[in-house]
Each structure stands twice: as C-alpha cells, then as structure tokens.
Image 1: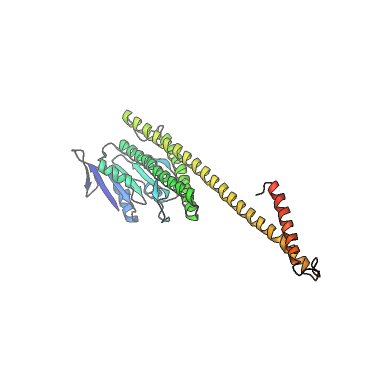
Image 2: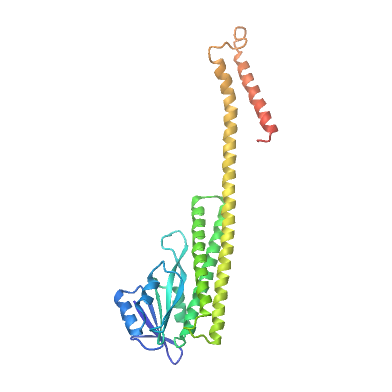
Length: 312
C-alpha cells in the first residue's frame, strides 16, 4: 500500500487522493501492481522501488541519469519478531528516492520514525531537506534503541549477581546479536552519509549541509555507543564465564575430596575382608575397632597432607 502526502500552504502535511508534484509517497509492503503504478506516474526506475524491499540489500547511493532520480538506501532498526522474550533488534533497509517532482520512501515494514515525521509536519517542498530529515530520524532511532538495550543489560546484570540462569545468558546473547546488527548497519549508513557530501545529484544548501553534518554526528555517536556497549557486554560475559568455570572447579574439588576420604576406609576394610584375620581377633572380640582405627589414621594423614598443601 502507499499513501500520498503534501505540504499545504499553511505548512500542514495533508493526505492526497492522487499524485501531485512536490508530494511524498510513502510505500509499505507494496504489491507488484502498486510498484508499477508508482514507477510509471512518478517516472522512477522500477529497480529503485524493488531494491529496498530486499531485506539483504546493503546501504548505498545510486543515481539514474535518464530520470534524474537518486536512490538512498539506509538500514534502520526494527524489533526482532522471532524473539518473544524482550525487544531485541535486527536492521532492515529503507529506500529514499529523490526525484525532480516527487520524493518516495519505500520499506518492507511500517516504521515509527516516519510516523513521527508526519506529526512533525516536515515540508515535502524541499526534497533534499526531507531526505535528510528521514536520515536524521533513523540515526536518532538507533540511539533510542541503544538506550533500551543498555537498560535491559543493566537489569540482567543485577539479576546475575543473585543467581545465574540459562535465560539470562540467552538474553545477553540476544543483546549482543542486536549490537552486531547495529554496528554493521551504522557503519554502512556512515559511508552513505560521507558520499552525500560529495554527490552532485542532490542539491544541498547551506542549511542542508549543516543538517547533514548533524546526521553524520548522530551516526558517529551511534557507532561509538554501540562499540562501547559491545566491549562492556564482552567483558561481562567473559567475567561470568570465569565465574562459572570457577564454581565448576570448586564443585569438582569438593567431590574429589569426598572421593579420596571415602576411598581410604574402603581400601582398609576390603583388605581385612579377604579372609584375613583381624588383629587380636582371637583374644578380644572387639578387635574390629583396630580396623576402624587404622582407617581413621590413614584418613587423618591424608587430610593433614592436603591441608598443608592448602587444597582445602
């Protein structure tokens, strides 16, 4: 489906029923017929509309001389629908097509930041400025989602101090996966922003250049924040891996000590159980206590040796 917007003389973003010049066409999950209709009426290459719908499409800029249209593909974060536990994220592409008469945004899923632009009443008359506003909203959304991931990480970290469960480790894995998606996409988006400073197909005024600089700063901040959170998360997972290994070593040490102390009496009792006469058995019916004493002496000798070696 697609929706057509245009800024009225009063500066209000209005919904139109038909295509008009200087309007914004927002396309979401379109059919093939809708793509062909938009391509024909807006004079846009059909490939510019199809490429952003590929979830594996990488961020880039492409210019078509015949139609004088520029395609900007950027990745933005969305909640991973496969994870039902909490909001982990993946990134998908969005296409921004700047043409002589129209500006088009196209994506496989609805995006909240475009709804925010609608409420903000961004002007569709300045197409370059509109495209930069979309890019700025994408960078801002990364920062907002990074804050959410960090809050969840802090919550998991507090719970880990009380008890360690598999669910908490799985949640940390989901956060780490989200950060990998973010870092890869933010770096690709940064390359696109760098090219925007040099490309001539999109005319930028001084105010537009300042806005592009702001977008670049926001994107770099997202990269630095993602790298910082990734290092923190790696440190946490490494520390808790060491704690788990240490607890396992302590458990194995305890079990080994029990085995040693139980093995010594067993050896003594087994020796005197093989048709061997007990010491003083013919003189004292309670001579079996001597067997217990021998086992007790061995246990104490081994215990003293282990204690001197500070094994326990």
